[in-house]
Length: 105
Image (cartoon, rainbow, N blue to C red; front, side, top):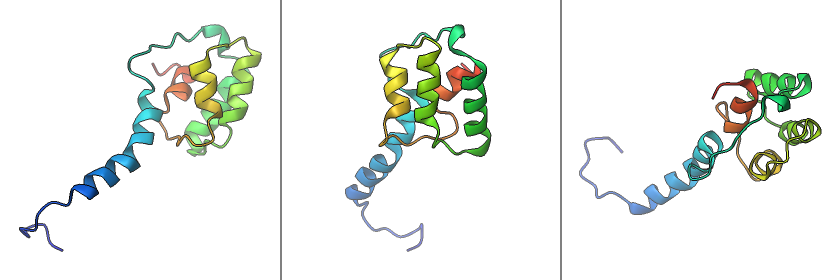
């Protein structure tokens, strides 16, 4: 198929694209209707090291471990901890939790 065809747009393609993109948008922006306060005390050496490693390697398999490190540091914010522990969540560079840990607000 070429770009200059005059075929009608298939609405199912839009739905499929939204289905693929929505988890990434949620990972980057979180819930825009609920701001999350991040305490600097939660930026422990362990949390920073995990976040840096995930960010640089683009491997976010340690997100549940990051949740444990944040919780050990005193974080009791359900939005942060649940985001890290959600096994269905897609994580990408720009993840709002990793950015908070790294101070990239």
